[in-house]
Image 1 (cartoon, rainbow, N blue to C red):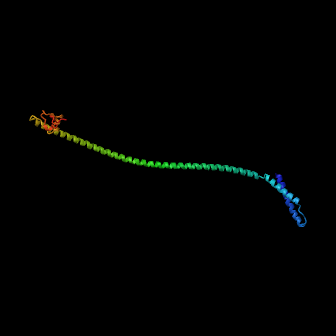
Image 2: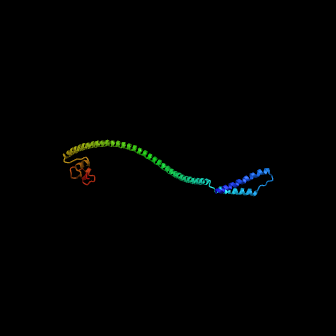
Image 3: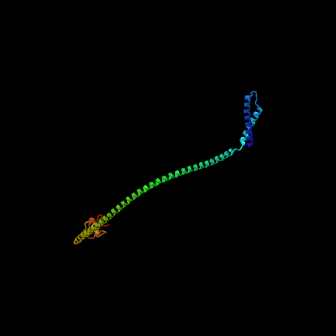
Length: 218
């Protein structure tokens, strides 16, 4: 194809030179006529061969074009790979953002729990103090109750001794006349818990309310 290109180029150049020399001769000889067969055949044939040869002639442009296309394909593949990586990075970014939001929420919850725990600890301390105060007051109350019980027991013993003394003196006074005298059923039951019959010296009709000849029976 290189030879075709060269032949076409030479024919085309020859037609142009032929036309140029024709105009030079035309200046000297105005009657000179251009040979159209020679001009057009060389011009058209040379142009045709020039175009055909130039199209298929390997001048290195084809290799450059092939290399450029290969480089373009390589760049396109790298571009697709980069797009894929960008998409994957965006997905990871969204995932990391969600994890970050989740961690922030957990941190807020933990802060709330810590505050609640601190508040509960303060309440626990206050309750412990209150319990300690109540225990101290309880001990004081127990001491007061024990003291009151001792006083009550002492008073009861004193009252019992006094009552026994009174009963003894009354009984003595009553027995001296051949009978026993009691002011009421309470005093009588202290000596005779089940009461007395009508033939007993301590019997009194005022204490026999149901008139069954038995006074102060239970």
